[in-house]
Image 1 (tube, rainbow, N blue to C red):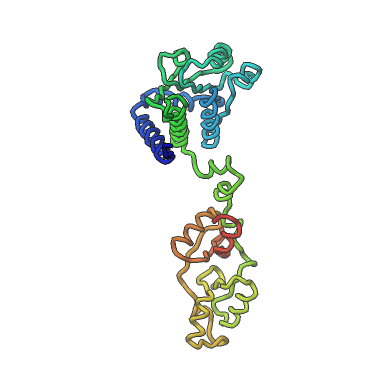
Image 2: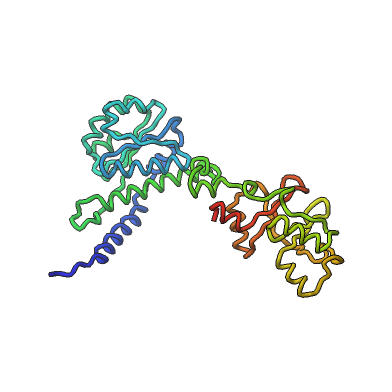
Length: 322
């Protein structure tokens, strides 16, 4: 009995599809620019269609487009023939994926689709196909070989369509100047949404809730404030703004030097160099500053000079930002 080598088969698939993706670079022509311009000029939504594996790919591409600034939705051609064409308006454009360009279900609905949609664009592997000739702009995406050992199952061809869709979405995103803030508006839930929408002020301990002492306060008074606020540190203020910070590390140094708790002013033993972050910055940016500088605390600055607070690594961990 011949020994099975699953890894060998898998590596062959990866190599074939990888080569197909690289070859896609040479297939992009000026029609890609034309397609991007036409989509950007579309007043309504971009409707994607496809059957079978192409339909699954089209659904994914539609979702990617919608989340990156190009309003889009997917309609199954069969459902379109049974009423869903009513979802399409003249201001909308339709982008159809069909590897052969001869998909029966799509060709059957094509005449009606032309009447209700403003523009029709196609992605096929054959510029001479019926569907390609029917589209205003047709992009050829062709895999010379499927990764299937029988050269039958859609593998390389669907991978190329997916990569093409990503390239299209990101090209449009870059042109629109789409920002992380724009991205956050369509991703409010989950871990990704939390990282893109949670601000420092949402987590930080601010104003009266933050531990603060005047620079003239004694070391003993500062320790009382540290203990009361339970953060293991206190900010030090000159009455107008924060000028220093005193942590449990500073306390250990004071004790090793036999500093007098009553006579020693906190201003003389505080740490004058400290990292800050604005209250309206993203919390994930605060995490990056902490990790880069190997610190566990940031002083938070407010809109006014005398407004300040504290953000700790513990708060970032507890909130799920990191």
